Image 1 (tube, rainbow, N blue to C red):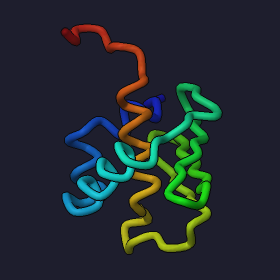
Image 2: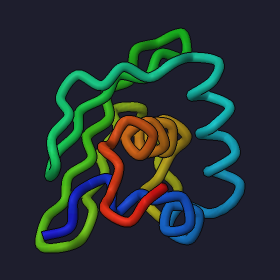
Image 3: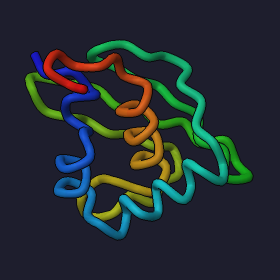
Image 4: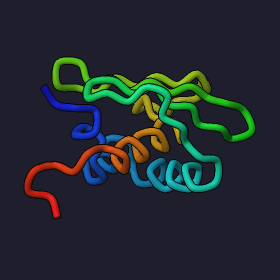
Length: 101
């Protein structure tokens, strides 16, 4: 089963969320910060604080990613800047994969 980190690696995330949301998520991650509350291979819960603490859930289910954010403003892809910020932080905090430098 693919881990959440596998499903949000940078190239995959750009493809899934789109370049605009990936940039917005990175800016939000750098300015607001992301706190990983639960961090497991198949599930991540993060709090993204942009003035309001937003809870994001990323979960690997049957090799696909489910996304939920309590902001209520996902794009047609299901992503929002909060979920992208949480996905980027998940990738950054994940253990190195075999064969990675």
